[in-house]
Image 1 (cartoon, rainbow, N blue to C red):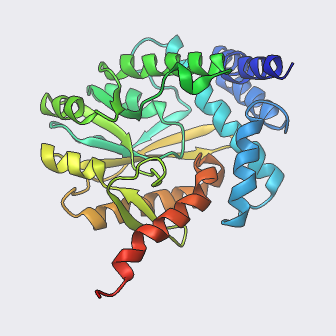
Image 2 (cartoon, rainbow, N blue to C red):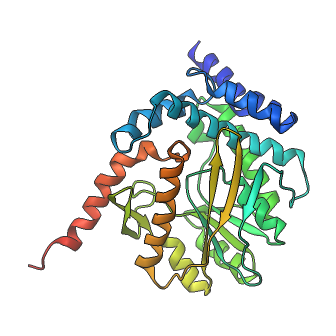
Length: 307
């Protein structure tokens, strides 16, 4: 019975609810999505419970019920984006309710650097809109990671295929991603990656940063890749209006990968501002307590005086 309930819940949250929203005019779709997000036991209840169990102990999220509903709404928007993208085969299509602020650099490759905050599919469409092919770097996953959750695996496969179509390149999976990423940059394509990876998920090359007033850490792998390829990092982020269900894809100024600590902190500052603006959009709240513990352990040897 529990397996059936999970299957039906996944069918609703990953396929039926966002699929219907993608077919509706957006003014109706946003009402539908906001109505669904208001149900504590509705779509993406699991994600909202996980965020609510952690975030309030580390950040003032305001009204807990509103925060949880906003978490569910962000997840619903993100899944709806996939079906909007599948409906519109032109890689450069972008709807009126997703604005672009700023421009991608013209000529030459770069690493588009984002975060686990927001709805990231629009980065690939925005790059295509600018005439750029792209390659996503991602953690490796397979069917075994989704035992008993076949619809989540199917959704992931569908989304991965759409990212490959939009970028005109296969996804580069870690570990073993360095060679295809370097080759993509060498032929002028852009690499798309996220920088806010905790030590548990990316243990190599973690460097201290300040985030939400705490000592955290970011990995330096994207910066090392950029230095080797002789390209900059270009930050991007999503700003939300969760009442109107509109978004702004913002593109920042290029950052120097040779200034490792300065660039990592600049990226942390961007993420800090966006979490404070829309805390419900950060999907890594459940990672935050262990992240702080691991970051403190990483920083401890640096703080210890030589013996």
